[in-house]
Length: 115
Length: 115
Image (cartoon, rainbow over all chains, first blue to last red; front, side, top):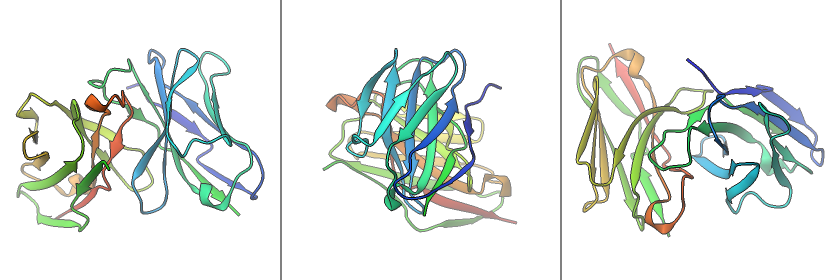
């Protein structure tokens, strides 16, 4: 069964450094998402992306965050200047369409640790 | 403000019994409600989706109900097995407030099925 893959599984970065998290969504899916989960807390929406544009973003997704689909398969999340509070699991997800009746398929996440 | 509540305490049940998990929400008018399973260190895995005008949905040993008057969904696992042990997440779409396809998750309920 097709799956969403994310790399790396664990990223350790010094505070203030830039980090790029990578995702390969399921190939026939058109909508892509990033969520994060701080340890022990709930999964939180960051951003949704369709047709090479952000379709929605949360308050968490400030100017330090950006997303990109650099080629036909990858979907990336960049954090420009990381803060301690960015430490979390970051999940990429994709869905066939953007309709609310579609399930979202999640990768197994990248654990980001900011030192 | 919008709020989704799930039992924060873990639920321990014996193998073979039916597990019932609760999701309550306030200040929401979702069009769809979804249930996901999350294992430690893994991403959420989609289980079931129910529409706001559906009362009940079933899939194998799983059953979901959705009561928009009570603003509550119940998630049942019948004939539970130790392999069902995981955290179960309730998620709502943006619904009538125009939140589109972003998902808002509850904190999850940890289920442990004992032999």
